Length: 166
Image 1 (cartoon, one colour):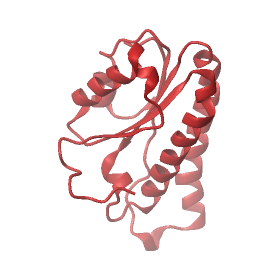
Image 2 (image 1 turned 135 degrees about the horizontal axis):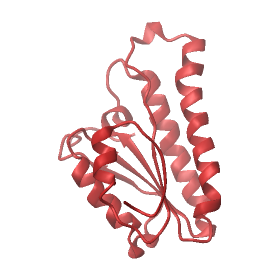
Image 3 (image 1 turned 135 degrees about the vertical axis):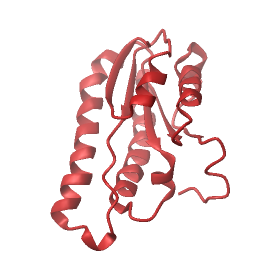
Image 4 (image 1 turned 90 degrees about the vertical axis):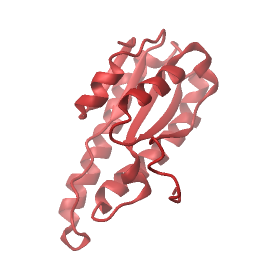
């Protein structure tokens, strides 16, 4: 597996595919648990705090904890998000809010951490594309990947074609 760090990766298929990636750099993978699908009418303030706020707080804490191991080592941070949540789907308002916040967080971190030589990118993937995700991650964590930061890369085997991106 790649040198470095792994945050929470709930998907066994994703975790298995990423275990094959080699990297000379420390890498933090961020693949948070997405809130469950619910009808919009069911979302209360308490539920939103628990399902959105808790996930975002966990991600922020994971990044802050990993930062010392990434700084000064050409570290890489790779956010991994389900593409259908980021593009929008019915009954996924809370998950969409998490995905939107994480996309914004990744772009901001790319700008902020770039001065320390850390790249930050997001891969939005479809279920079943995990081996292709590992290939894309391998390119991002390779030595030449230091020129790629702040990107949103869709690995969907065409399943996102024709949909507007946020």
